Image: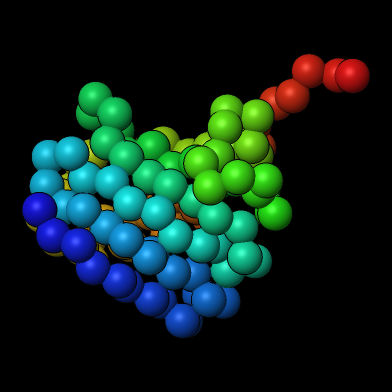
Length: 103
């Protein structure tokens, strides 16, 4: 397991602030437009959750999730920070909005 900071300034400021590698890889960061995100491994998938801007507390709640993306772990090296960061970056680009019930 490792802890690192990886910034990819070529993608409008996308940044993985903390990343843990290995079988239970996870981490968090900020998208290019300033929203925060987190990612983790859930069964055979990498799951990325993007949160709404200006969160009210330090820990996002389910209602704070505005978009989500999943990606199979095939061809992803969970022990390589660069591989995980690239997969997260690509997942953020492909994230789909979370449907919300009408008010």
